[in-house]
Amino acid sequence: MAYFYFVLTNVDAEPLLKEEISIRYPELRLSYSRPGFLTFKGEKPLDFRPLFARVSGECQGKFKLNDLKLSKCWVWKRDEELNIPTELAQMSDKTLYKVGETVTLVMMIGPDEFWVGNYQLKSNHFQTPGEVSSIEVKDVPSRAYYKLAEAFEAFDLPFDHQERVLELGSAPGGASLFLLEQDMIVLGVDPAEMDKRVTSNINFKHIRRPFETIIENNFKEDVDWIISDINLPPTVVLKEVYRMLTFLNPRGLVLTLKMNQSKHLEVVASVREQFRKQGFKTVELKYLPSHRQEIALIALRS
Image (cartoon, rainbow, N blue to C red):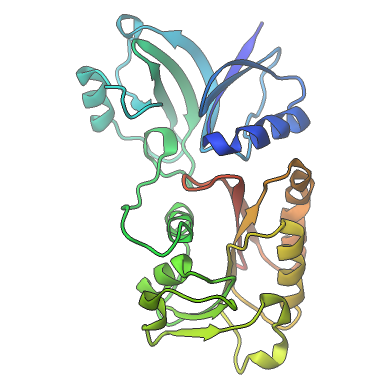
C-alpha cells in the first residue's frame, strides 16, 4: 500500500526541504510537485514533520471541483492569479478548527486542480489556510520585522513591558522596531547604521561594534532576551550565543539561523539538546512564512 504526504513551503527552501527529507525520510520519493507544493510517496505510514515546511501532512490525492465532497475545510491557492470557487471560499471562511483537531486543507494548484491534505493543528500554527502570515504588511526597515512578529504570534512569546533585549546584528532595524512597538528596551549591537525610526526611540541604545566583541563588562545589568537575525552561518552565531550565555542569563532566545548550505542541517539536528543543556526547558524550531533559507529557533527557560 502506498502512502502520500504533502508539503507547503516557500520556493527558496525547496532544496533544503528535499535534502532534509533525503536524510530524515530516506524511504520517501518525490511524487508530484509545483513551486511551493510538493508531494512524496512511501510504502508505510510515517510521523511526517519536516522542518522546512510551513505545513505538512497526509495527502489524500488530486481532485476536480465536482469531486470534492466536503462539509468543512480550509482552502489555499498556490498562485494569487487563481480564483478560488465561491462555494469553496465561503466554506473556508466559515470553517474553524481548534488546536488538536485534524484540518482538511484543500490546495488549489491550478484551474480545476485541487489537492486535499490533512494535518493536526498545533498551538504554534498560524491557523490560516496554507499557514500564510497573518501579519499586516507595512513600511518597515527590513524583513526581520516580519520574522520576529511571526515568531511572536506563533509561539505567543511572553514579551513584557520594559524588558531588556540584546539584539545581535540589529541593523537596519526591522526586529528592533517590532520590539520597540512592544514597549521593550533594546540594545542593538551592530556597527552599521540604524533606521531613524529606531534610533529616535528613547528605549533604543545603539552599540556600534561587532557582536563578536561583546563581553561581560559591557553590561551593567542582565538582559531578558537575546534576539538575532545575522547573515552568518549558524555555527558562527551559535558559538557566540553560547559564549554570551556564560555571562548573561536571558529568559528567552529568538534566533534566525541561516541555512543556505545543506551542511548546516547537521547543526540543526543537535541544537535542541544543546540549548536544553543550557537550562532552556522549551526549545523549538519553526519555518515561518517570511523565511527563505532560514529557520527560527525559540528557546525559553520556562
